[in-house]
Length: 292
Image (cartoon, rainbow, N blue to C red):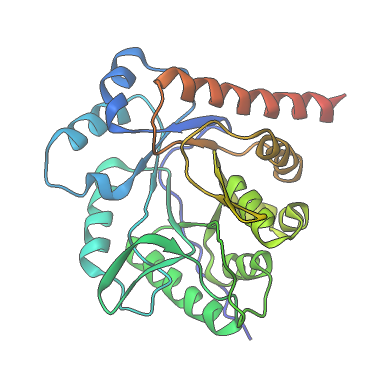
């Protein structure tokens, strides 16, 4: 029998069901001065763990004008190492200071024996790994005293030990732990191409009530002999195929706060804003079609 999860709260305020962009250091001053017309901003939590300096200075001022989501990349929540208490302390301090509406982490691991890898590695999708993740997510939510979102990651290899499809694993995790879901549509597309599954099946298996944020990004195609591998690089505009899958997601889940994620080869701020406009346009078209 599965215990009923606690009712974890979100942060104060709301994030509008429209597109936002990632806050990156080269754009701090321009964002503050021009106030681009986006619905919200997402910041990488670990970039603001310091006691002072420019990152916190700008985040404090920008936060006054935009709803905020904090997105973590370094907790290694799926590892069998003990949870990093120092990391969690810093995250809790950051949450209390900036009161983000949403806080998220990845369905991944990146450390073993206290040594960290510079990657977000997927878990085997087994009942044992699921029970482990339910415990870990619950511990983090209890400590932070709020709900966190867990993001699906892209993958390039699969474990032979896996007994569950990724989408069933994620659906069960949200049900048993009470966490929300940050649904990365680009990651679904990348993994679907790499492993040969139907991304539409993935979307249909996800509980709609759990989805609180969506990510969109660009990928890179690598070729190995006759085979193509898609890599989640976040370094270019969203591909047409991912836009098409996003349209399916909007039909399935309705309007959800959607982030344009771009981390390397960073473009001008206006490019990010333009991608956000396109996401908003798709939501508007689907709303209009549903109302017709």
